[in-house]
Image (cartoon, rainbow, N blue to C red; front, side, top):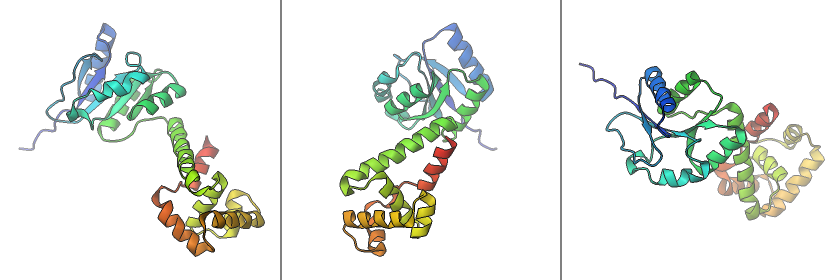
Length: 230
């Protein structure tokens, strides 16, 4: 006989009330998961089988207390995805993401059907966030990556963009077209870059990029396309 699939579990971390009970019953019916209401002060016991999702009510756990609450989870739930619902707006979402490693964000205005769809995605290991929020995060990390390396090598944001295109094999003409610069300006930037990283030609510069920036070099094309859409 084929083995039955283990039932997934969703812990809705909120205060118990008739409203939260109706919410849990709806989720259980429409996701076919075991849904439990869990007070923020109660200890959570991890289920013995199936995937688990922690769905946190931001009306009852403030974003600044999230790290302490997460720290008290049992080790067996360390890898369980966390998502927050009743998020007010973009700023509230970014604040929550800065405090905890959330995999999903549900705004206050979102429908129950959308929340159910997001729960399925999160239980399957996916992220669940709005496109606008993902764009903001990507742009933030791109800026962070640039800033993280500027003290070490003294490169400006523009020079980091040129280095990214250089590492992709772009010629001076192609770099000029991509960044809307003259070739003369590109040559000036390259001269300054070579001086700062103490190399004398492109081959040496590419070796330096590979050794010092390597896999975390920002994808300028992706970031620029996101900026245009944003």
